[in-house]
Picture 1: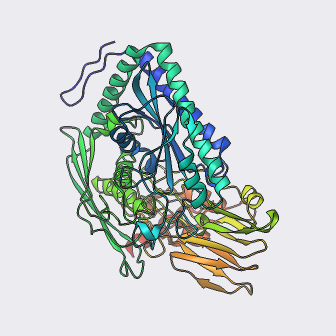
Picture 2: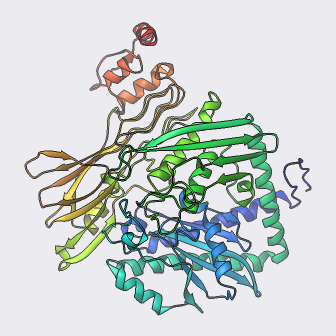
Picture 3: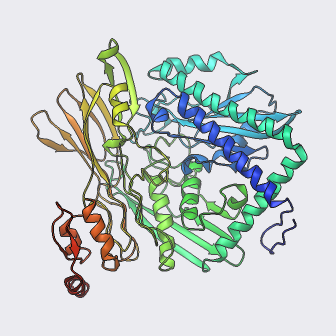
Length: 601
């Protein structure tokens, strides 16, 4: 079936049914890769939280199938496969490469990418990619995030600039020994490594079978036409937007002594609806800083792209075809762009990265009602702390793991409330929330409570989801918790009259019950009987809360997501009856008067 084209997008000629079959088959392969990693990993950050992503890239280094990968992981996959092709001209079946170099296309040092070239009849056709966030990567502090690292040397992580880690399907033992020597809890790392390699190998095997079944010519035509179809869909989505330049500025929290006043982050979005392109300009930002929050190229690009894709037709495929219509402009030596070595990118995947996603998607809300999103909750608070210590249950052996007991409310949108279990903007709700029971069984910790914060979301016509509160500490011996939290000073903002979400908080709870408020970025030593208490941000709201359907406000109060006081004082909804017996009802006339009063104030 031949498809006509516009001046802006190429045509495709493959039978659409066959193209849909092959596209879904690729998705199934990536799902199988992901399930392999999930079910065989050792650390909770992979086996429970699912902080990993799998993808398929073409031999000419275009993202073909991202599956359900985290946006911050996936958009840059082709940068890493490109470095594999540039550095290794002798690719052979059985090769696998370990790549975690943020100056060579990776996100940050804690994300270990395994890449396997798929070679059929001597021709390199695809690269399978499995990227896994490590429980430990050899940092100088017991955390994969080092916000205060003045450079890569103080950061301390082992860096592998796309090195061959397997040849002829066998480990290169030199590389394995390096990791075992420098990474905390080496057996846990090696188990995660085997799971990641296994995921990439499953993809390699299934793709080879696919090529054998359909033939190389059919697969080549599919790749060309799938990209052409995806590009057409992207052009159509962009043409629905008005031409123009959108500018938005947001603010990262102060982080003394490097950022005593915080950091302004500017995003300029240039929409060319006539030609079907979007450019995101990140160059109007400050230079690299001597800390670990500098953005790598992969992260700056990924986070800007994610902000754009959050605001267009959700049915547009995410691959090299649609990506060809979006460009991200970066500047050498910019904190949000191209890092100059040896500036650290230890936390490039989060914090400032989350701000880029938020600021970009909120910029689209300036177009008018029905466009863009509010800002989603951010900040890897205590619920995402990295815990470490000695486990008395197994003879004092060391342990380390990143918790993921955050809730972090999602942003309000033009048509929906925020998603409760959002996590972070860079992950888009695709990571799983950790299991209290699993964490307590795997590690010597006690989780005292985990609850949703009532009234903890930004009010709006469509409200942001509330954050959560978590309290945990060591079960017996002392424990170190490293927290790298943003959003304590500058919480997620609402758009188009929506309110900001509440700010995050972190507290050190002493054995006597007294509490000390902690800064956003902190390494906290907990003694037996002490706890860390963290409160997540809530998502920002979309539209005025006075325009929210009163029935929705009533439902929120009954579900304990909102309070009676906020229903009356923020949303202008007057309720009669009691929460306890669910006899609450909306007083329509009193609500009309209350809303008129609030609107006039």
